[in-house]
Image (cartoon, rainbow, N blue to C red; front, side, top):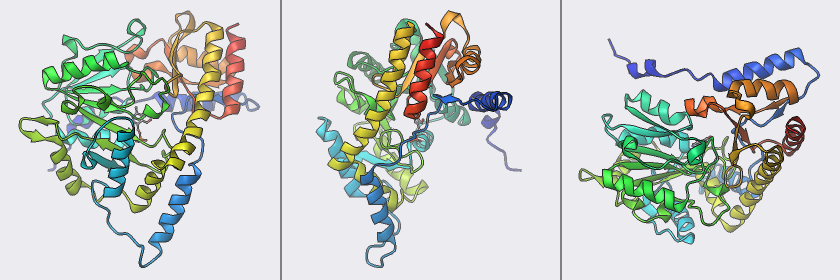
Length: 394
Ligand code: PLP
């Protein structure tokens, strides 16, 4: 008999988005004339920019033409696209070799797949509250998880300590759900800690494009010593609205070596065995993002979401509510007023002002008492929600 991977039985069911859907459905059934203002979604709402759409159309036409047709693409990415992405880093003062960049079908896929490079005996540190996939992907492999809670006292940006020692260190900055961003000084401490202990940092930079404060690091490779301890995982999902299109990229420096094994070489071997590459059509669409025109157009979309963030944070400031995020991240993480727990606050907002957000408890137990607003909603919903929040907490 085949033995299943019994670690799947250790996974905790996540009721977060299911419960939200059930509660909003029940509310609408009871109040059929009501309208809800949705600030809970982690998905983008604006369409792809013109440069990407044009590239997609061209790529489809190429596939219809005998002379321009493309079959399998190189497993680690088309060399011209890898060069384009390395060039994008170079413009920000980060020197990468083209073959240190790998293209992927998205950060989620990559965050799971990359674990294949590490022994299952190695533990994984997850700073909580956290994107739930970090824990689940490691539980599936039977890896021990070291949970590091963060909170208001450290502004959800904890420093390394003895109790944070682990083989793999997950750092997500800007963070989902807290919107908090590590400063150069704080991130440097984690890099020094990883190098001192032989750990590897998995740096999730899915939201780097939302950083507007130029003193904050958008890539871990801006900092000293990162090339010997970090892998950076990026995504065009939020940067360029690719959630339904799928594209990401990963940087694995050649200096990242443990036990004489090069993680860059191992990943080449992994990709050439376990994938047949990202499709030609998507690679062409992604390439358009890294052109001057593409960068200008995606910046306009990001600006739209940032205006949503400004509208919401202004309402919270007026209401005197403590929060992180919003300025350099598409999420706002607020403290629930009057010591309310996060599901109670969810019900309160739904009943009183018909605003839907995400209870912080769904991102780890230290998220209890906090609440996440997303800035990816429509302008109409955001404006009305902000107005209602101001009125409720006047
Ligand atoms: N990492 C973080 C922190 C995220 O919030 C998300 C998506 O919400 C992802 C990764 C997944 O990105 P992708 O759409 O590229 O799979």
